[in-house]
Every structure is written in C-alpha cells, then in structure tokens.
Image: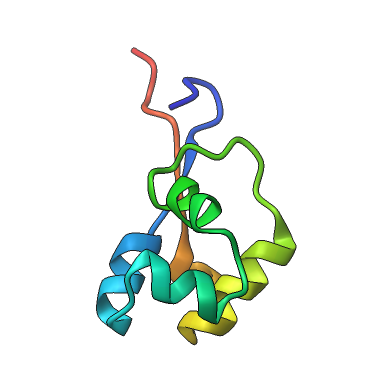
Length: 77
C-alpha cells in the first residue's frame, strides 16, 4: 500500500466465486488470457486496463464498483 495515496483492491476472485466461474471459464467468457485473469486475481498488475475492466464487468455482469475498491492510506501519526 502506498503510504501517501492508498491502493486499489481488485475483488475479482470473490466475484468469480459468486458467479460460479473459475479462471479458465472466465478467460473464455471474457476472451482474455488465463495469466491476465490470474494477475488481476492476485492484485499483481501495476496498471489497470479499462478495456480489460470492461470485459470483466460484462462477463461477470457487475459494475466497476463491485470489482474495484479504493483503500485510503492509513493516517500518519
């Protein structure tokens, strides 16, 4: 987490579980590479791709706010 700006949490695994998808099924439905799905699941991506986010939202029938959460920085003491 960045001390000054916070971070973005990606809730892809939770949404996949609720929709009954595994990474393989989602990669086919969203027309994405399995590794790309895995990187989003593990929060190891460094830049969000809006086209990918649109594909995920469409495949999972969710809103962007369901997929992404902003976590503010902790208060400095």
